[in-house]
Amino acid sequence: FNIRNIYKMKKLLFFLSVMLCACHASAQVKVGVEAGANLSHYLVSGSRYAEHVEDMKVGYQFGVSVDYLMGRHWMLMSGLYLQHTQSKMDLGDGTYKNTFFKNAEIEVNNLIVPLKLGYQFNLSDKFSLIPSVGAYASYGFNARKCNLQTVCQNEQSGDVYIKEATWKPMDGYSHTEGVMAKRLDPFRKWSYGGMAGLKAVVNDHYTISFDYSVGIKEVQKQNGLRDSNFQLSVGYRF
Image (cartoon, rainbow, N blue to C red; front, side):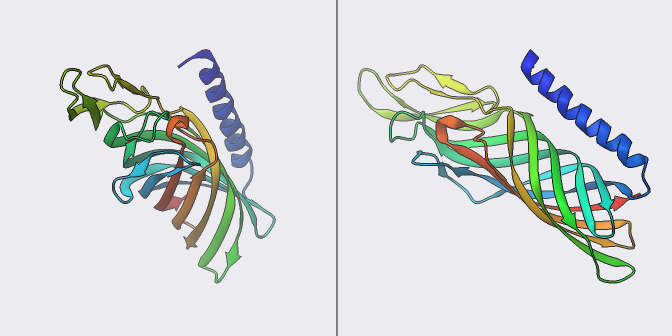
């Protein structure tokens, strides 16, 4: 953590704390817990050289939801979630049309704060649907050491070979072996994007939520990577 990131995190937590305090003062607020699975990968912006190796990989998320009903139908929806995502890609160093990092696993934990505007359709006394649209902010940190392969070239023979390695996406990676020494820039910790979702509420307590989020800010500029995430969660509102 540097001073700037700590300041941003304090502002984020202060905003959420104020919202929670305001919410508890009103009977129109529902606080709940949610958990579920996600399918994620990265979109590639512009003419970059990153490529997907596999289809979307399964991760998970859990956290606290806060729904504030404004009037009879309009709703402000937020919360705080821990989200674990996984992906695998071929990546470049951003300077040549070559892949220097193959089968790079990317596992990241993110703290997510969404802020969405929803509209509640009361289909019966015990069932309602809430479509919503809004934005999110996230702070990422390393999940674990991930595997990747680096493309190297022997200085004497010129033969190209693959070297197995590990890296942490938030720390980046570099190798100096042979004549193809390259660097993989770290992922950004702070990012934001847009999201849309649909929540079903049963008996005013049980919830099933589906959301899609897409990054606006690139999480790794070198390869033009932006988040893309489908989430399915179940929960309980108190």
